[in-house]
Image (cartoon, rainbow, N blue to C red; front, top):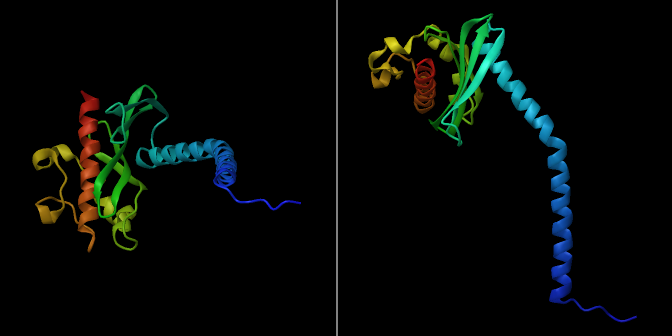
Length: 191
């Protein structure tokens, strides 16, 4: 038996086979997990809608502003019978301490805030994560942004009405930014 010499051709072929097998395995894993992941994301959104506007019977429609891109905001128009129950708006900010986070903001038809749910964030545990607690987000319930100076939410340090989270001012500002974005979208939708 002859000794097999390692050559560039043999190494390239082995690397190609290994890469092809790994790619095939990844494709199979993706196809198996794609549907459960999408179903989980949809359930998370539906639960958040129920948390921010609990008294609705159906979703009239969902629109997106702007129509494409990662910077879009989703507006879910909700009905109770034939009457508007309000709007659940998926919004975001890129101004969090640890980057982007997303919220679901509920607005009653009169423009007052029903409730807010934090959908996703990467804020500092024990500090920025407090934005998901009722002690912080509860101060927004019933608030009509249209009654505020400049129709804008701001923390008290910036001349506004919102009590910031201690040691998490950036997260608090980001939260206000996301809610302001939701309100701006709500105004466009109501026109």
